[in-house]
Amino acid sequence: MGKIKIYYVTNSKWAPSFEALQKNLGNRYCLAKIFTEKGVTEFDGKGVEVSRNKINKAWKEIDGSNNNFVLINGCHYIVKKKVLDKIDVLVLHPTLLPKGRKNAPLNHAIRNGDKVGGVTLFYARGELDEVDSGPIIYQRSFQIGERDNVSDLLQKANFASGEIYATLLKNWPNVPKREQDHTLATYNRRLRPEDGEILPEMDYSTRDRIIRSLDSPFYPAPFAVIDGEQRIIKGIVGETKEEGEIYNLGGIKMIIEKKLK
Image 1 (spheres, rainbow, N blue to C red):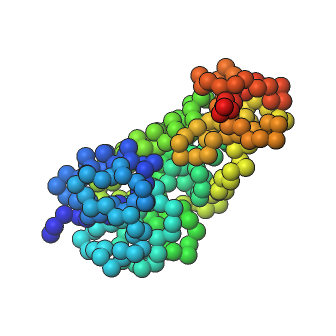
Image 2: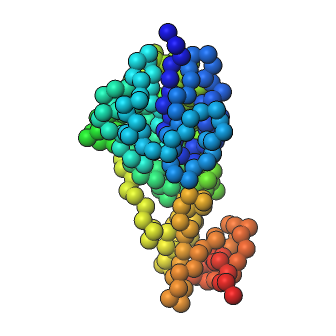
């Protein structure tokens, strides 16, 4: 019997946890292929074949024997039935499911004022089943600090993912399989560009949470409309070291990006 093959689906947000995955492969596992997005280069030169196509297009080449499996951490499309029928598909989601299913979970954790976050590894269900609803394998929690931004949470979620990888590869295929309590499920909606707008009537706490929830190169910057023009918000005076113009927006002083001359 050869090594167990892992087909890894991911993107650049989760590149930091990849090292933990490689470290724990040992002699039992090998990475068969990495499926990622166009323009992502973090996984090049790692000694593993990289594809920038969806795993659905490669379903014929996937080997579902020998306890091989697909591991997903960062995927913005639905894995098709032809893949799910062929091989176990395990998914990492950065909330403590069943709380926070669907979109932008780390952003919403800050916007909601959550104190605890986490990562869940679960079995993917059928193509037409509800997203993020499959049986739970492992979970790891982490504290959300009062001044954490979404970049901080992404770092913590990457670390928690690495811990889950280590436990998974130690025990696979003899892992737990616990059904979620669907009556406790909550859902995150997709963030729209207008969700980053800071309005004059917003209180201090609401502004602060919006700003921290979008403090990342992966998301659009928060903004305010000033004199009919969108201006990027860098932070609240006293809460950021960012430089820019100081503007009193509804009685609260904000740091806004300087205009280009």
